[in-house]
Length: 261
Ligand code: IPD
Ligand code: CA
Ligand code: CA
Image (cartoon, rainbow, N blue to C red):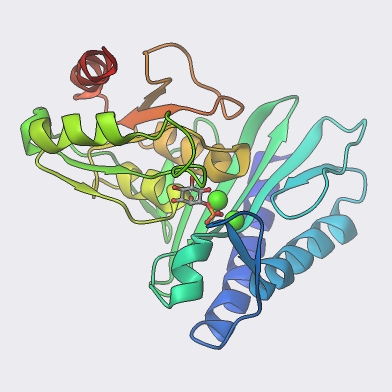
């Protein structure tokens, strides 16, 4: 199957779901708590229903892994990986930073990824070897070479209050070594912002495949680099991710190593 066709479908799907988020944004949401600070709104579910419905109709034999539903396994080599609303806490508070992330893999390799921010109307897309785009225009990572001039992004997992593996040491270390740090609350957008040069580096400890599947391909196609925090190879099934413009990657690994001691 053509990657181009899959990408077009992924992008249309992310845009359609984004429209659901936009339409309901700012309205009172029904919120259910999956954990003390981990919530899900009825809009996460509506967005997911829309996306899964579209995939089911167009590609009935494909597998689907989506955050709010049990995985649909399939003998097909294709599997969709979906975050129907990345940035749920922001969304529930009316903080305008969230997106839809839709990716599809063939035999375990992501072959198309789309991330859509419905408020800024920014659509980030990529397929392997074809480059990364924002609203159809080619994007590239930044050219910042020094960590002290770098704008960094990170996030904290929902177990931040109960786990000692909570990112505070790393956060502290980068406060002293980077230029500034943002915690925007949408890992998929963080990766796209890195891909288009708004951020220079990003790290997080406990991500899930739906947070990174589309954003990672977009980042790589924009010339970015990804690894685990210790510099080992990263794939979307690993929890910890260090992603950068490539230039500051080695330096960030050093800081992480130092902070861990
Ligand atoms: C979360 C966001 C957040 C990140 C968390 C994710 P959700 O996803 O991407 O930025 O720090 O690790 O779980 O729950 O809003 O889909
Ligand atoms: Ca997410
Ligand atoms: Ca989500």
